[in-house]
Image 1: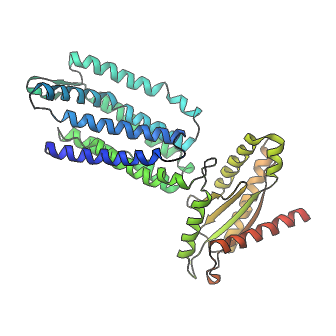
Image 2: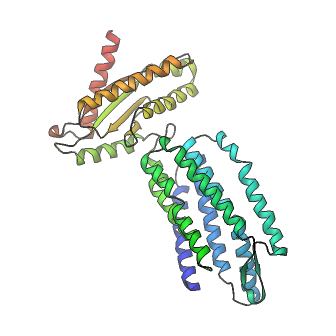
Image 3: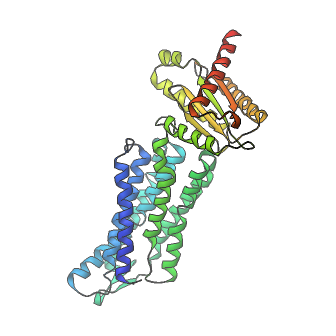
Length: 376
């Protein structure tokens, strides 16, 4: 590829990253850990793309070109293990959803980056990673493979992390995180085989864009506390399901109201109430399939949308939820019990209900269930 070609593709990649970054700056949850880590991924990738442009002056004699070549290559080698390290932390924050759990990585990852930085500095004198000689010519050193190996190790570790936690992720989120390393890894192999070809960062930009579209951008439809869908995302999804329904293929929904939630809040405080909401979401999710949707409709109301057309199958799901809640309460040492009132039905295509009408139907069924429990 020509010099102008590298400039063009890198500038396009930087523009894509800039657009994503600006979009994230406008979001209300930009201070949450996953969002902060993702923004750091964007920034480091953009800086590396700029440094990659500077390193393209390889072979062009002249003081400015030589300075650009030195700075560009030094920064690329310096940041190479840092970018996948941030991505590993981002992935971990997605599957574990706990800032304290990330601290286990906060020794190993900086250590790897620190060793790489020390070796890089020494390489300026001993040529371990690379040399830039007469004529501003870049040449690989005998240990150029070290930062590549560190990058691969961290990338493989991220891959294993995603595989090991596949049951905690929605299917499309799992696929996006799982396939993230593929474009950069392909580009790394191309760089090793075809000396002088480097499209790794452009491959990373493609992966970042994919994750943004499938995961990050979707966060606008997610509830801040529970990471379930919020009301806006839910209503959009139900509308899509209604429009796609046919006589032979429809869907089912469960509306759930958390019993005695106000009493729990008043007796034990709002932090305990928040904990109950998070635990309730986890309990419900453990009863569902990967393609089922769970949403927090209001303060203590939840929705479940499933690709089910058989009322008996829906009844089995409801029984599974009751059993799971009972098991949790029996094994819990908390001073309160979690319980749900449920209204559920299969959407009847022939009734042509809209979103609001379908919600009223479920709401009525739920309060019938609540009255029946109080009557007993």
